[in-house]
Image 1: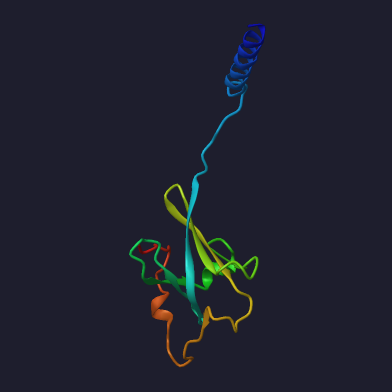
Image 2 (image 1 turned 180 degrees about the vertical axis):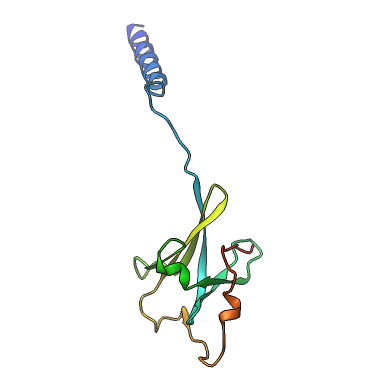
Length: 141
């Protein structure tokens, strides 16, 4: 009987301690950022920017394209290009939003341009029309 009383008192003290821990000035704040991540099938680079062919995140699947202007990379505010951390990580694109609005995009790419995810475009074609007026990226589902 004494053991049950002691166990009950210990559990009660633990419960009171956990409740009071939340009232000791700890605040939980939600980040204004959220991101969407999609796998990249192919990346094409031209003078004006990156053409990213990615897998749609929906259950139906399929592929879509995103046009990312090279000008976004100059100040690093809207585009960050990074190497994939290891060979086991497939190239992917993370699109970050802040307070529901597009903030920036990160491309995680294989450093070796001979990798199957890198594609080549004919030099004689003009691709600037695809990059003019782009100020955000919307993921197709």
